[in-house]
Amino acid sequence: MTVRVLVADDQEPFRRAAGAVVAATAGFTLVGSASSGEEAVAMASTLSPDLVLLDVRMPGIGGVEAARRIRAPLKVLISTYPATEAARAAGSRFLRKEDFGPAALRALWQAR
Amino acid sequence: MRARAIALTIRIGGLLALVACVYALGVLGIGRVPTEDEWTLVGFSAFAAVVCALAYASLRPRLDAFSDRLLRRDEASARDLVTSFGSRAVRGLPADELLLQLAESLRATLSLARAEVWTNTGGILERAAADPPAEGRTLILDGAEEAAAARAGVVGRTWLGLWLPDVLLGLPGGPLRIAAMTHAGELVGLIVVSREAGQPDLGPADDEVLTQLARQAALALHDLRLGSALEASTDELRRQAAELRESRARIVTAADAERRRIERDLHDGAQQHLIGLVVNLEVARELASTDPQQVRPVLDELSGEIHTALDELRDLAHGIYPPVLVDRGLREAIEAALLRARVQGGVEGDGTGRYPVDVEATVYFCCLEAIQNAAKHAGPAAHVGVRIWEEDTTLLFEIVDDGRGFESGAGRGGVGVANMRDRVGALGGQLHIESAPGHGTRVVGGVPL
Image (tube, rainbow over all chains, first blue to last red; front, side, top):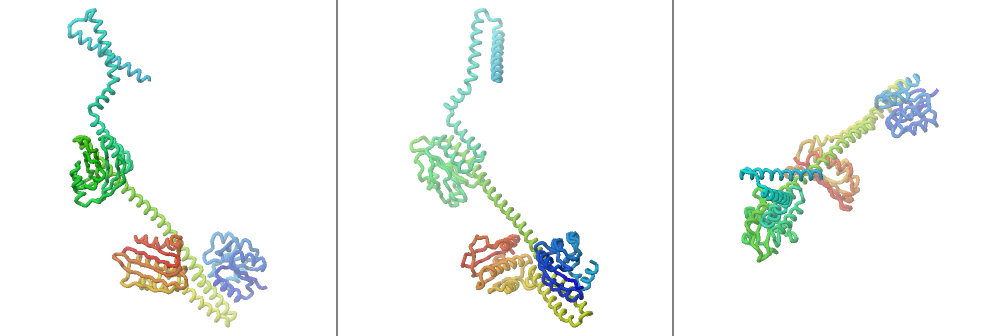
């Protein structure tokens, strides 16, 4: 089975890096990338991804609110900064952007 | 009503007691009690004495007033004039009103044809009030005339004809007096009074009244001037304090906004590239074991990311405090700013050198703001000339463009211009902006060294 991944971040460098991570990790495939919370919610409802990576700080509704609205087997909030209370309260997994990589991606999916 | 009845009772009781005392003294004096016939006379006299005493008590103030009017009319009203002027001055009437009232009362009290009050401000003698009313007149006094008038006291026509003949113009030809108003030896003004030809001369009593009034008027005028000077400086202080409060609030807001901008620039720029680097390193590590052929393109991308991150950090550092300003000073920093803003222009800075850090930063950021404004608004063909120079103990700067310009007072510039003013103001300097549509813009400022 291939895990279908959706990435949402307003920062283009990270979207690119996350895309490279997903492409380089066996068993995972990138199905879409969004640059805002609203876009992520819309894409998630049409693409039905298995795993959604959401940046906490994005223009508009942001990652925490988008994670509440999205239905997916695994939602992971990511941020440049340490986890905030709001991110913890959203009931999603949390990961610092700098800790993201093929190994972290596999570990997140296995621990879901 | 009750109080009056009590007072009347006491008065009559007192009188009766007095009559009884006089009677007792009379008995003691003649050494016997009066006879039956004498009793009738004594009773009648006592009654007459009581009636007279009561009548006199109520008539007395009127009799006094009548005798005053008859005997000391001029003296009394002159005294009134002096005291009433004093109380008016104390009540704090405006100067014009006070002087006009003075002229009017003088004319009425001393039976004058004309009364004028002149004020002196630094050798400019001005007719401030006159009765009958007359237009204001101004005379310029030289130092000798001013000094002579200050020493004059109360003098007559001869003195005036000699020292200030111009004051005589339009005055009646009769008796005339001038009273100098002085404070601490300085001439504050003149009181000029005159009667028609043929009217009685003004006497020593009139001179005395004039002397006293001149002294009081001088003091009142001096106080009024002091008061208005004080009020003006208080207003100025209040305005400066308000400006300072606003400026301080703007500086705090600007500093906060600047910190937010730096944080956002760091977050959106260099930080994201560094995170991309770390993540891509993980990708390279993964590929090294699964697909070594693909490692090289990832490493190329990593190298690109590192250079981008470095550029962004350099730009950011430059925005916070340009290294060239620290190393090379104002002139070269402004030249670099012109290059970065991509505008045509140049910097003239002959005779300038290095200055305290706050002065250099202020002048640099003001020039930078003006250059960036010119780059944004002046139009692509505009030429921007920057000049910095020293004059006395001030470092001046000027940014002139020949671009589109704008309507002065149209409020353009907003936060940027307010920042410039605040920066310059914080060092005790000043900034002016001139512009007109089609005639370019000139920003000129200076900070004390």
